[in-house]
Length: 446
Image 1 (cartoon, rainbow, N blue to C red):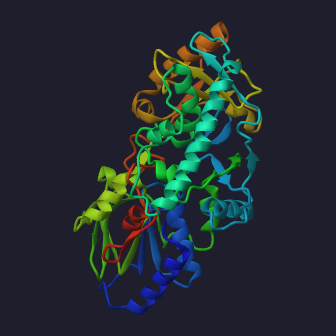
Image 2 (cartoon, rainbow, N blue to C red):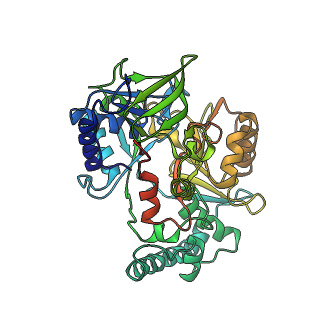
Image 3 (cartoon, rainbow, N blue to C red):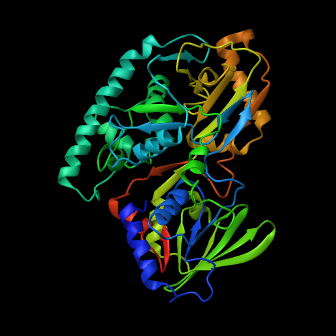
């Protein structure tokens, strides 16, 4: 959220204020968090000549929510796993394109995912294929979405500050889409809940259908066996060392003023305090909502409003490995219409193993909304049982006992809590400005 120009001004301010704030500071800048935002901030400072900084990171590695594990004989990314770009990857006004350029420079192995190019297969609850029967419903949704984009553009002209807002559900209803049947609900889930991770009822129409709306039509799956987090390691290669990077350091409190910022942290089992004239907070948005870190003085009301409108959502992913593939292998997604358990109950599977070396028999299940929170907090044995029940209704006795299962802790980890940002009704450009605004000498990014 902090731009390059803002960070350059920040560097100039550091130089001007050097020696006029904390007594015996640990560094001139504290960077709280070693995710992509923290590593990028450190890189900008380093390349601008400010090399006296310390990065505090609660995990044992850099990369934040980028995380990989060995599963079914291959390395899979259990955090971010795709890299999206616009049609023109050289357009640096799009932050995803900047990440793509770093990936190219670092030699990160990518595979064009082509999601949607092979199509989806859709089953009803009893295992009957109903894909073609839903084509007219997909068509009606596409027409309504096009009308919603026109509505968003008109509202941008009439109300450029974005204060006139309503939910996506209302905007789509105005545009001719009001899902009532299980099939309509499923089509909306595929087009909306899956990519956005929240239902249409709470998300800002203006932010999704107007006001700086961005699209990312090029989709790349990260298949590099070093893991997606290698990108953070590569970007920070020139400046990441043991004196600057403090891993296994859990920040619990931040004190800030117009002269100094101090962070209290548990580092390798010992409590200590780090102080600097400046600090940059890059922790995940969810940590602010959970109160993982205590601020003294408390953050101003405008910032509290802002980070509660920028809602973190949980896009729960579950990986299941089998002895062999019994599912449809020539499609991008396998989806299920379930009028009994509802649109959020294990509706989405991807034969993800086909994208990795050796083609391991792995299915990846995707969940959003309230179900993603529930599944993220339940025992994986229960999740495995529920997935097998859904698959058995589709594939019958071809379903075999899973060999292994992994589900992420996004819903429970106090330093993550969520993996995507959803903009609720009422979010305006001022919301982002309030979130990014510094308090004292504490700056906010991420």
